[in-house]
Length: 118
Ligand code: SF4
Ligand code: SF4
Image (cartoon, rainbow, N blue to C red; front, side, top):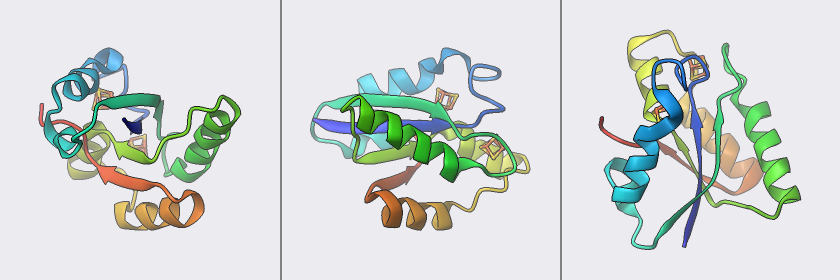
């Protein structure tokens, strides 16, 4: 079982992309970045990035604290396609390479940039 979390853009999540249905569909159909998993996928956490101007590390820290507390740990965090679009078409300040390294160093988790193509 692949245990994952998704972090979405706080400005988009449930405002411009409703109820996270797209990521949920992509997980169940193994679309896009979820095609990498041979095993079944279990979504352990679904949160937002903590808002601009780039509060993702404190937010990921809190997410990991609560997942530890509830014994719902995950190995991989996906940045939602909403975050990728915010970076490409908005003024999202997140540095994906830097966050990837910080998450690896601090939590030993992998960061995948993106979720689905729709
Ligand atoms: S891209 Fe995914 S995480 Fe982001 S708002 Fe849409 S469904 Fe939710
Ligand atoms: S634009 Fe970037 S930092 Fe701002 S809320 Fe969206 S993902 Fe988070």
